[in-house]
Image (cartoon, rainbow, N blue to C red; front, side):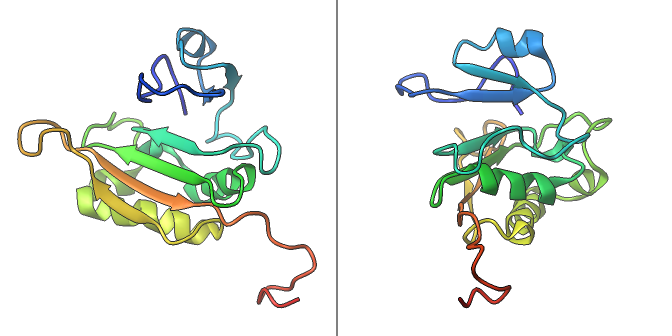
Length: 164
């Protein structure tokens, strides 16, 4: 869910950064990206990547626009290596005409719980943890993060209970 900015620390050397977004022009303007994919997750939540392909994933200030978040989270779990982090960051800002209704009705704490629920319902992640990462609490927009680590692909030799 990338655009012309990645919201990644500038002082980190990345082996590669893949951006998935709705707009090729904006993706092309993002200097951090080494690979760009145009794809609408609300139309098709299937990620066009291989299983266990990525070392981590971030969704910055966009989770509120997902219409099928549990399916998207499950897909992110599939493309992440086991133990890889998935971080969702958000603020109290949004485009009300684009944000899903439940997001608009909830306050910040409820939104963090909602994102944690997306992780849980996807069945692809460890227990999620929420953080207030606001740069200047009380003087700037609040910023929150909800993070969980990928479980990895289910073992094809096990049944639903996980017993082989």
